[in-house]
Length: 251
Image (tube, rainbow, N blue to C red; front, side):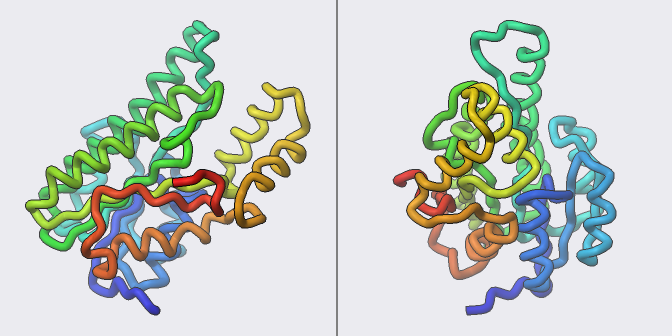
């Protein structure tokens, strides 16, 4: 089954690398008119490669969000993918950890809300919002309190916004990725392995062994779920959080 996005405008935040770039590549292949947003100069090069437009923005800054979306008259699908994953152990009361905690919440929760609120006046009936949560939005991981809290919050916002925006014909869903081979996830893997005093390879083997399906996902593996949720095939799905984790977490 082919899902086409010709003539439809899709915005993807956090799309200069990792899962966001994999999502953007999927929408580009499906013919979407793409607008990429990231707090990373590389977003312009990625946009050029995909025939997309781009904006550099810190989504926790309202003025930058407004400027990033200003060129668009219409948005059919908004993918809130931008996020920050840092360790914030509760036993560490240092200023650095406190600052990291605030920054994670500012980007992952406040930033997602700012982008969504700013985009709404460009969205009409049939529009779709897809938030990137995480399997850690359903479970937890020691040492990652801010990130885990932020992804629980994204699932809560998804349910709330689905109720708020349903009367306007706008659907809101979340995707909860499991372990995907990205720079961010491998960095977290290294930190987790160091905290546990074990080799990264051993920890990764244990994580993969806990999945129902073997193997580590790549960013491109995530795109199909977003393409489906943004399409008319998912017209009756809203307020849901879909796990894409190769069976790691029972839903």
